[in-house]
Image (tube, rainbow, N blue to C red; front, top):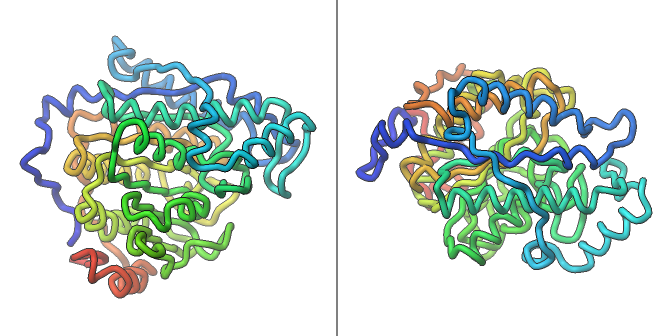
Length: 374
């Protein structure tokens, strides 16, 4: 069933929606993680993100009531050890002592990287906990380095610690949250996040990503293992997809998945590298596309989990894509009544049709309505 409305007896009133505020976790220290010349994951990425945040602050007479700045602190050993073994923490710390160096051809370490990576994980934890504990119902952690490629025992793909996975485990351990939905719309599949939770029925990992593409995981049939079977949903999209396919995937697939799972909070691995300007991908998502994606996700959060949603920055390597994407996310989270975009019209030859059919074959017995076109 297409998402045309999200009725719920517990849905907030328009007055409640009008009071939405967003906790912002941003810190100049993230720029101390220094990239080699020519590397795409440069500290300058955060200038574009900061510009989007400051532009929204300037639009409010009392910006602190809408965009609430929060301090950033480093994740503790205990918090990181909920995902990564102690040997992995030691590897990152030791590499920083030998910096500059690489952990693989893509993943670099500078002298400040170990501390900055802890700051990224700490902000992800506190963003997630802020929306669970309140008073914010939404949060944005504008962090680097990104995290979703980091495996339990391996740094890779620019990522040192898996920020969203660490945040999810903190919610479970500290706040007693039982059901967490992780939505990953980065253009690359979040192999580390999937593998961390693929045997866990209470953390649902949902990913839209270019496929085949780095890191090579995220095929349609990867649906979880053991008790976690069915709690991994991959929507692998071919190169060239844009707003219609991305928004259509959320409308046709994420909506029935979330309604069936009923999460208590939604964490978004918010990569902006599916943007049409991004140099590392071949996707065509526009600023309006990111607005529509956020509108769908916010509407789902309002229906399923009291609006509780936290965005954690992942990839995005075009300044225009970062600024437009983060701006779109904030606009839709701050909107009085964001509404739901109308059903996305798909061309007859859209690759989402066979993908939806495949998802129905894999998940249809567990998730009514998944992949339906009307």
